[in-house]
Amino acid sequence: MEKFNINNRRYIGNKSKLLEWIFEKIRKNTTGSSFFDVFSGTGSVSKEALNYYDEIIINDFLFSNNVIYKAFFGNEDYDKKKLEKMAIDINSYKYEDLEENYFDKNFGNKYFGKRDARRIGFIREKIEIKKRENKINEKEYNILLSSLIYSIDKIANTVGHYEAYIKKSVKDDVLFFNLIKPLDTKGKNIKIFREEANKLVKKISSDIVFLDPPYNSRQYSRFYHVIENLVEWEKPELFGVALKPKEKNMSDYCRNNAPKVFNDLVKKLNCKHIAVTYNNTYNSKSSSSKNKISFEEISKSLNKVGKTKIFEKEYKFFNAGKTDFKAHKEFLFITEVKWDKWNQKLDHLFFMLVISIN
Image 1 (tube, rainbow, N blue to C red):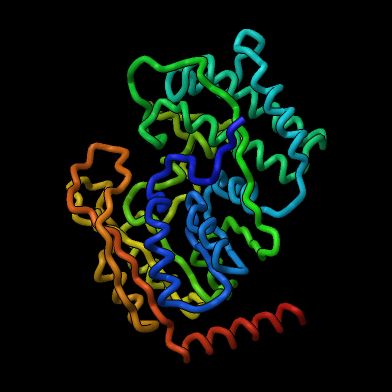
Image 2 (cartoon, rainbow, N blue to C red; image 1 turned 45 degrees about the vertical axis):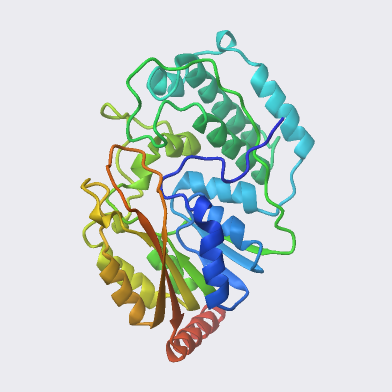
């Protein structure tokens, strides 16, 4: 049975095809053994960082991404054979064997075929029961949930996100539950968080900080609401044609005050080097695709804390909508933080640590 790796997933802003270029520039222009991926998204950047750094700090505020990080990067023990047997058992159940559930009532014949939606809801409930009965540990639970996320991504009746479903006949009875393949993180110091970035960075010190925040008005918690719903499994009431729950977990980086929020983040960073990826969709004709932070605003914020180099690369980005955008470029800012600022922040962190101990 072929297993999913961390990059086998559709996701807006995914950097997997740019990793070689990004790390070539970072490696040539920075030094250090620790790497902090503040807006980790799919986790592909953190996966690549495993090749070069001893300590990897991973953060994202989506519940689903946090589960995925724990499944792929967590170094807790798990029973591989037990999970493989469970996958075989899960795939043996047919639509006719199962009762109607929350997932197929809401998402059947919309985001998924009716039969597949019923099986998805059944699998999710089965995973929850196994955890409640202590038949799987936390690592195994996260692996099974992540495997479900990756398996349904392959059959979702969407263009790669859940802002809407494709209004045409839906393929059905095509779901196959495949396991993910966790990463080998032995010997690495892995720290995983699900916190608001601007609060978390005050508590973290790292040689290199990598920033790839959401830049436009598309809220990721809304774009991936079906996946968030599936992971949290609180079965909320849903609204509208897109069947979304009430708003929560919303990012200020998708709002008009994004430049101020970004500037605040940069000021709070405790690091020697800052790497920021950015693209020129700020010129897009689509209002939802236009960046909330301009190229100039990023440069200004970074130049306040150190000397900044800018690299660029032509790149065809993942476009899940109808945006007509040509001559797309990806930019990489690398800032060497002024020594006095780095020293002051280390002193402050040490002071706060002493206070917390006492």
